[in-house]
Length: 627
Ligand code: CA
Image (cartoon, rainbow, N blue to C red; front, side, top):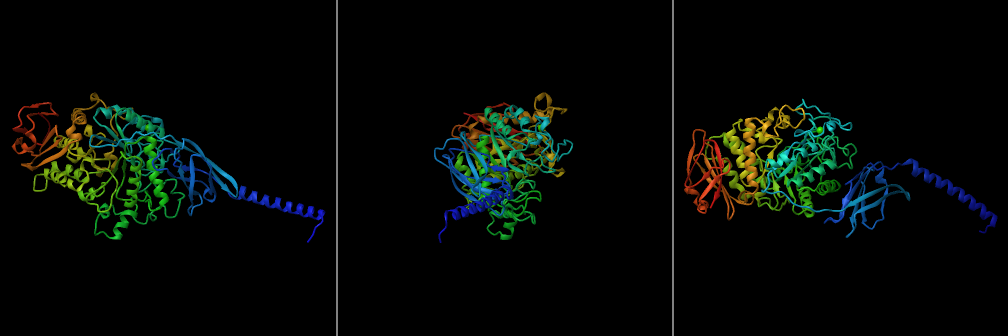
């Protein structure tokens, strides 16, 4: 077929007309029929020079999952993107190029050849200052809402549902990060060398939100505690005072008001739909006879109905959580992580998490909360456990609940073959089940348990015995705030009663227990006892680096030693209620033969001869041995 020029011109014009119409339809489609938004990008930034050069960025916003991602940068390479059944999410895998400089790179989001959204993502300079915590430390545990109110203006936030109510034991009282910063010299003066705060991230729940375990934003400090920058400043202020900082994290669940719960990234983001709760039996994780039914209930059941159970077998969620913990370590220069509810998430995921974090930070201490009654179940969760078979958690540390139970019972009991001081003896005697018992965390109470003063019937003698063991036995002691002023509190009255405000933490408090003049006689007696031992222990090699040696309890008395090649400390406990006991030291010669005298570090009394020692009823002696 042939055409005249005029015909061709006419056809071209017709074609051009059609093309313009088509183009208009095309443009109007992409411009008006589908909107593309970016509401969140997480992690909010990353760093150059990480050991692992891979990063997965979650982008959330309307229809963003329907776009094509483009990155042109000399810093990173786009590896892959992932979309889910929810078009409002896209996950972008990138690789940070070797030697890349810090700075921004642009991510373009393209729909039908047009850039519909763009985002400048920042890679910061990595600064390294790595150290973990160990038995050289005493960790001070603070419930941030309940310690000190540094800024009254942040007690309430327009953006947060629950308002402050100091009269409600289970309400928010207004404690904050600034309040803690203001009291760091107090913490340090007490002899503490590390700080663990219960979670500080946003908990925008309608009620009972002060404790921090219902996180609604994994990347944001709760505005009622302060800001991310405040948390970073806390870390810097801690490090100035040689205090280490441990962050509390929770991977098992989040709060039901978490922003991603309202628009789930995928159908399998959560385990079930609150149709069943966990059985809280962490034993099933190690139990060789356990049923799939029990194991599933433990791992996939919800902790409570307001805490959706996260399915870490979703690889996108798994990466999200792992990167979140690395982000906080790097952002806030953390010395350790305390992982909540360690046995509840999938154990293979938890091992991957710990291994990945320790690949990035080989010296960091990862502590798993293992609320388990028996030693073998606890020991199972420490890295390289001799009792965990093929499983390696990659955790350096676990919580010594068996010792907690023993310390809560021993001084209230009469001696039998297994009771009284034998409770302590048998806990320590089982240390062969641990990979390293010196690295496990010890405590007499915490934010979930009866205050120790209450547990021993407010008996100061028993109280001192327990605290002395805590500060001198093997392991890393954790000291719960206000135990140094013998605060009482019964868990059965409600958790609010074991998490009372530190007296003097609020400007209008009638008492101010942060200084001796503000403390009553009982509080000063306890404070002086704790600060004396804690400050002494800092520089005592036998306690901070030494081994543990004990002798079978006799006549309701128990003697143990901490020792190195050149130093030793002897601890004597008399659990008798009736009268003092004189202890013949002959049976301890295997260690005493190197020493001539000693000093009672609580009373400063000199002990000239190491042949026999008289100890008061229901009491403890800590004797530093001298050559
Ligand atoms: Ca406040």
